[in-house]
Amino acid sequence: MASYNTNEFKSGLKLLIDGEPYSIVENEFVKPGKGQAFNRVKIRNIKSGRVIERTFKSGDSVEAADVVEVDMQYLYTDGEFWHFMDPKSYEQISADANAVGDNNVWLKEQDECTLTLWNDTPIQVLPPNQVEMKIIETDPGLRGDTATGGTKPAKLESGAVVSVPLFIEEGEVIRVDTRSGEYLSRVKK
Amino acid sequence: MSPRRPGNDAQPAPLHPALPLRQRLARRARLLRDIRAFFAAREVLEVDTPLRTQAVVPEVHIRPLACEGGWLLPSPERYLKPLLAAGSGDIYQLSHAFRAGESGRHHAEEFLLCEWYRLGKTIEELAQEVLELMATCGGPAADSARWLRYEQSFLEHCEAHPLASSAELHAAAVKRGVASEGASPDSLPAASWRDLLMSLCVQPALGADGPVVLTHFPASDSPLATPDAEDARWAQRFEVFWGGLELANGCREARAPDAVAGAALPAGAEYLDTTQWSADLPDCAGVALGVDRLLMRLTGAPSLEAVQPNP
Image 1 (spheres, rainbow over the protein chains, first blue to last red):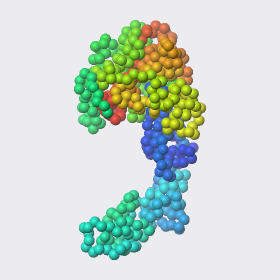
Image 2: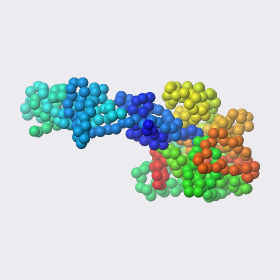
Image 3: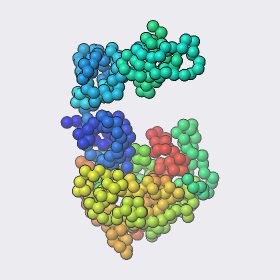
Image 4: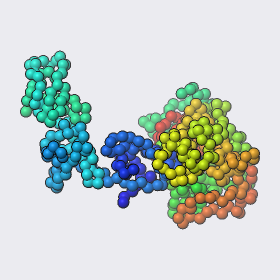
């Protein structure tokens, strides 16, 4: 089994701790004048996002977590799983609701997503930072009103609801930032 | 931060990594000049002994760096002590030192060390001299330092006695959030739990408002130091802290040091045979000061790298 010595610690390194995959956020080497050295690390649980601190005796080895990130194309969902495909090998993989989480509303067929795989199983799915989606439901637009700055809710084809400017019409395609859920611009087709 | 009184000159401008190279080098050069002037005025002789050795000084937690034909020295002690035994008198060396595997914001495998030995001085007198050197180099005034015993600082910041058992020290570490409850108290010796608490709970709090001199270290952690005359549980060893960082550590040298239990010898290394000169070692105290660290604190630089010419 692969492992890392504390002297290989650096941010981003993936460790297996208490059976869970973690990523090093910060690593600090501490050592009293003539004493034992330690590595004090901040680590983020890749599944839950929670950050904890751990201390290791310098020179110790810690098991590596087999965690990789891959870019895959989103295909479809059958309601239970979300299916992705490697655009080069055409290999398919499916992610469950735990891995997809709240990001399910930003998944659009054909879009390239970043999947975090732990022991070849997806544990996190990140949509592109920006997606283009069609509005399927919103109040009628106020033609010409591009300046007042008011907003209204709009439902997208994926089910996500975002605030859009008043002039946006049903059936239009808009660009949305998936990290903040904010409207960015209208996409002219 | 409370205002600090400068030493001789006004405090130089903070050293920023973005400063022009020439300016950063000039600040470092000034520190080296100040150190040399300080010792010249006190008639402590500069010596330049070899950096490479074939036999290593036994240390439990310091790993020497291997080189062709031997080891690069983790401190000049190995050659300075025989000089003292041969009658050199007061001496100092300003040279690079090497410690394998040490790297971080406050550590580097290669760093600049200033080590000096004073005949007939007590550790209090030597610690005072460290403070005076710092003041001469632009640091806080020597009389602004706070002096306290290791035991006192430990009780203050860890709510545990430094000589408590592994179990008690582990419990203190768990309470302070620096060890996990799941770790077995026996997974580390008491001395290592003590080091953990010292590094993470005590040290960061030392010297926020000016230098701190810590004295009376546990004798079991200080095999090369003379035990305290009144209480042999403690050693005549001190460390100087400034802004949560250890800048210097020194001790009254033991004339016939005990065998260093647990010292791990690197593969292929042999221990230095000190028998030829150790009996002639005069009564003296010695101290080593991390020059890069001092420069960090003098200039407000964020890391060792920021003050080294070629990090």
